[in-house]
Image (tube, rainbow, N blue to C red):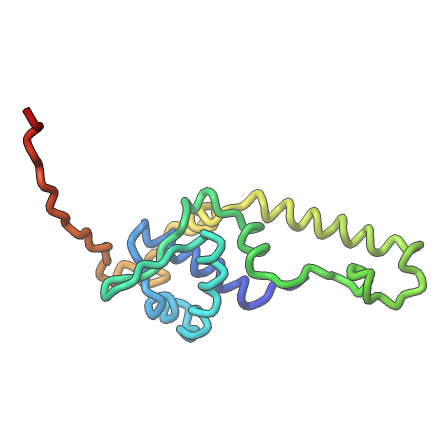
Length: 165
């Protein structure tokens, strides 16, 4: 089984955000770090946002950050969100399969077992695991050369009234 380029870069976006220690990350910076187009990353960002893996902050100092802790984002979850199809052979889709052995061949069940093992391994690994495995990731991604961005906090005046007597 081969994962799509979309899944590969979705994992990279999440790794970048996890490495950036909760700071907001900008798509142009992520694109530069991985030498890929910003438009491509924006396209990948949509399913990540829709599934709560990433959240966006709008505005001049906006950007993206993880939608939940890196320790809670499994590789299986990312693959499930970004891959369209897990059919390893034509017989996975029994509605369109033309094979005369569809009901008597063991290939389908063997491939399903292999796919289940693949998913089980992905479920054991998190984005945090990937980042922890490479302690020099901040340097490799050029994050230390970028000024950190924080979300501006809007101050709201609150009127205090004395209790009525």
